[in-house]
Length: 255
Ligand SMILES: C[S@@+](CC[C@H](N)C(=O)[O-])C[C@H]1O[C@@H](n2cnc3c(N)ncnc32)[C@H](O)[C@@H]1O
Picture 1 (spheres, rainbow, N blue to C red):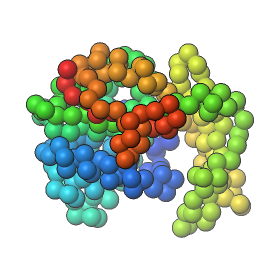
Picture 2 (cartoon, rainbow, N blue to C red):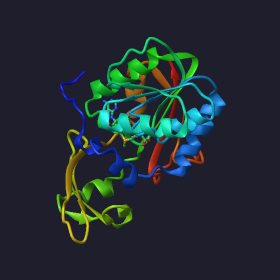
Picture 3 (cartoon, helix red, strand yellow):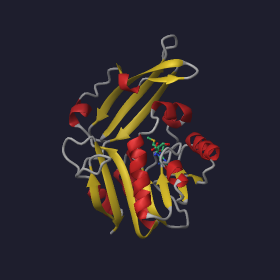
């Protein structure tokens, strides 16, 4: 496991995360239906505030959520308690964990995997997943499909992301600006995110780094972790992955 670690400052304000990314309904439905098809116990790695896991647990699955950020985990616990849903919440690192039991479905949703930058960390995570899969168990995850046109545009200039604007009940309309550069050797986009209102500029400024994992890389990394790809989709309606897909969704099983 690489030395890189610690909680990402981006995830220290869990309420801000939920307001910024309120959780795509299509993604939630996709993971709920996968859990229904698979049956049995579900583990989510990098579960955040439980946007996927709480609805899955509400469907009656025994669920465990593993998450590095104590702030995200605290909000997940609070949301589950409010909804009267039982989930086992575990503070831990998806690169190396031992829960002492196996699961029918392991989920890594909404680009959580892209927080692992080194190939050795990704392989170490896949190995840990494999050792937690019950017979016939599956790993299902989604990550961006890297677009070289977008990466080429990462020139360090601060730009407004209109599509990410949202309304905070206390502060009002929130504008989000992002300045990003792309490190083509590390395959990591290094960004700074600026949150402002009309009257308060940059009330939060946080770094965010995301790995790009290309479609030819992933099956090899999975194989090194003892997993093989069963299915690969490019959107939530399970269309096969094509060059113009913005998402990569993988279904894997033990090799
Ligand atoms: C983009 S959020 C996705 C959260 C959730 N899966 C969802 O669908 O909303 C990424 C999450 O991964 C967590 N994370 C990052 N690195 C991690 C690691 N090494 N182990 C466990 N969780 C990690 C972050 O703290 C954050 O909550």
